Image 1 (cartoon, helix red, strand yellow):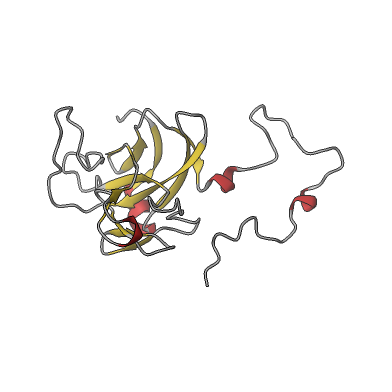
Image 2 (cartoon, helix red, strand yellow):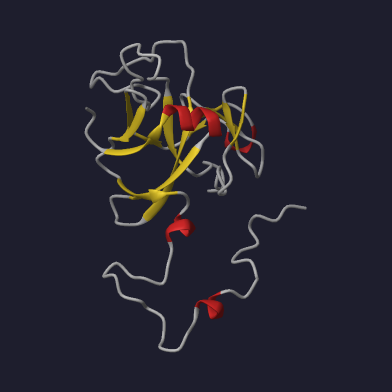
Length: 186
């Protein structure tokens, strides 16, 4: 069995088109990662250290449940725009589309050859597929939870205690206003 946290199944990634999860990076900061389907028929080029040149993970031993998936930090290389804003990454013809400027990144290699992010590559996160399950195997990241960073935010700190002031209710936290306007387009 693959070492690392079990994330989801390849079937889920293929059915949904992408799968978002939150990790802790080497600096103990939270970051988001997306899993995307990868149906690359070409054998990846491997470097002297055995790592794939495209940053990806092996897709198994030919078992049909071991369909390929790749994991990328959920950020466009151009302006740190989130590729999946909580409702799935836009994917067209095997490419992840940046929702801000339309740059398209190959789902298998992470490389972009057009738009504002041309000649850049998404930051890869190592995963492994075994018996249809996807595992986080990148030693630089620790799995936190499924979904976006915001999906896991709560008023409970890491020690498990409630950080709200006495008498403050959940209703005080909801002002019906967006926390950001960065998602608004004109």
